[in-house]
Length: 578
Image 1 (tube, rainbow, N blue to C red):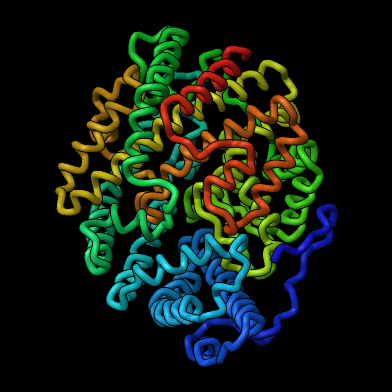
Image 2 (image 1 turned 45 degrees about the vertical axis):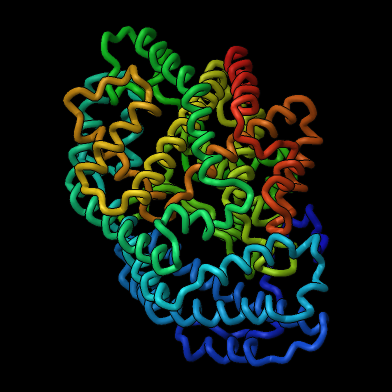
């Protein structure tokens, strides 16, 4: 099922000729879509060859509809005030998705019930068939309307956060643009901007808590309808977490608390001492202990793109060429601006196979991390696009985040492109490794919080804030003094998009960071082999279970304290070299 690609081809990709769906088909209304699904549903399949043809036709329809829906979502995040985009999104969620969901369930049953499914290549289809059986098991017609309602409410988070800005020094700044001032060496300026950001965020405090409460109740209802006690149990099944359990997550939380948090606490105590502060406040956490101003790895968005292409080329010419293609196709929207959604993402476009990268650049060192992170996702999209069926390209997040975090660490070996001053380069590397330690802690904080949210769906907002405070006591640095800023401390979960839009998609970052550290350890020993293993793993798509993907990439899918300790010891060793 794999098709060889010319890895050195730099030409702009073209959409393949459609064989099943008409060339001018645009899925803007259900009556345009339905005939294709009826064809698939009513077609006789009397041989494995006919089954393969049927799967290819379904895959083509899925790719066409998937790409259309992704562009609609992209448009709503590029401009959260775009009424046409919002209207298209509402149409998709209310008029197309509900019917689509019912038909797809029927097609999955038709696939699994066909006798020739046993003759499909198990090396390729094992993971997909396992996932499809689980989706059939979870499907409930009464949940279709609830999913549509959830999708609409989830989109509200982007609209709320995209409208947040502050006025400072005579200019209106998005919160992403304002965050750069938290790295300023002037402490009074940091405090002033921090409090302006806090004041603006607290204006949406009630909206965001009410939105989260509504989402929790909707998700709980979906779970109960499907026969589960709560959404925690349901979501593990829905995410296809066949290779680990909630108990494994709890074990990992404990490992991170025991192995990682002492290091995180040491780092922040050291920061307090080196900054010469009696008290480390939340507006002091981003400033560099060197006493120097913020690192500036690029001068403009175009400069960021060009330097990233050069960096990727040094790792592997194929990587740089893919980013060059995205640049030439205008598939990169990187600037921060008013009414643009928050955060960053790589959006796969399943028909053409070229992804779209969205982010909010404010000329910070974190923007460099974001572009190489999303660039890793983009390379994954390109490498797995050669799989023939769309369903074989839809990887789990535990796999997807190895692609992005692995690229962060491997690209770090060529960050001299961004930082020509050796001291700046050293600072940037050190900052990123320390950031990884904090990320491991934050993901366990977020995952622990969601365990509690959905195990106790009838909690009050006050109880929610108290639990968040309690968990932050375990997974945030003790040296940071939030006295006088308690409301901000108790509501920092309002900033986390995942809680609103992709629940439980959080611990994957920590699991993948372990995979990325193992990949980087291999890279330090034999860079060519590590890059080759990385490409092999990314080319697998969703044809293998998670542990096989990790093994192919040169890592282990292991949450035990000894394995976590071994990787943290490696990271500490690299930090000590800096």
